[in-house]
Image 1 (cartoon, helix red, strand yellow):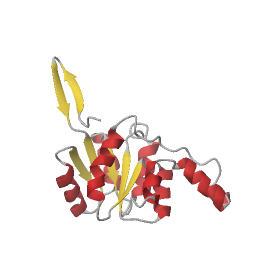
Image 2: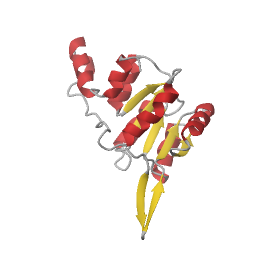
Image 3: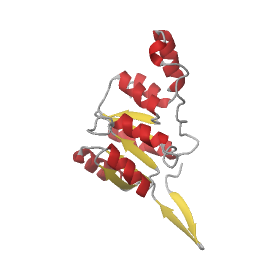
Image 4: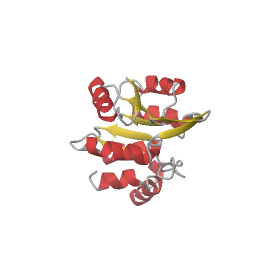
Length: 179
């Protein structure tokens, strides 16, 4: 997939890099991501979930990276706000988090994450490929529908099947394969 967007203005064809919104409360992560991705993306960032949500309304991104652990609006609350908003609900969101628990991945997928990448020793190499895959319209996994029944009322096997159905996407497979 060509990661650049082409726009026609009059008789000219303009090339524009995809707009990436980084939502992370750690300024070092923001700087690292900016340095790593600036040649491929037009980057703007927010220091937290609420700020990122407001910024997305002003300058709609093509894709978002979102941290899970932030003060105020955490990643889940921010993701739920994006998915509940008509103007922002279809923006691909990649969770980029230090949380390694399977439950965290499941929560993110249930909230509407398109992918989940753990900040480990090799996440830099995987990030650009994941972002480009999510920018390809035929590759963006659909935002999951809510489970048909409350999860707490399910037996463990039913819960695993509901999660598999809901998260039957590459993010869950990547997690199980150890990213």
